[in-house]
Length: 169
Image (cartoon, rainbow, N blue to C red; front, side):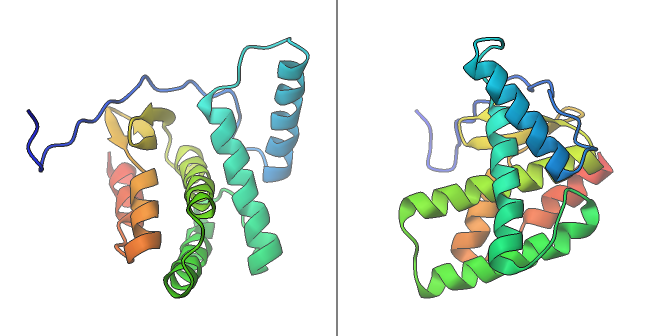
C-alpha cells in the first residue's frame, strides 16, 4: 500500500523524433500537415504523442502572436516571453477561473512549446508518463507538464529550474 507521500510514476520509452526541430515553426507546421495527410491516406501509422505535442506547441505560438501580440519560436531566447505569457495567464485565471477543458488545453499547449524548446536547445526526446508528457534526456526524465500546470494554478515557479537542470546534465 502506498503512503500519501509516495507517487506511482510510470514512464514509457522515449519517443524517437520524427521532426527536425531546427526548422522554423512555419516549416514544422508544413511537415506536421504533410504527415497528417499521409496518415489520412493510410500511408503512415498512427501519429505518436510527438505529433500532438508539436500541434499543441504550434497552437501556443499562434496564441502568443494572435492574443498576446508576441512573436516567438523555439529558440531559448524566447523563454522570457513564454514565461511572461504564462504569468499573464496565471493572473487572468486567478481572477476569472477558466473552464476545466480550456485550462487543460492551455497546459498542453504550453507543455508542447516548452518541450520543443528543450529538445531543440538542450536535447532529449518526448516521453509519455502517467503524469503527462515529459522529456527524457541522458537518463533523466523531466515531467514538464506538472510544473506548468502548477504554475498556472498556484504561481509555484519551477519551470526554469527544470530547464536549467537539464542544461547541466
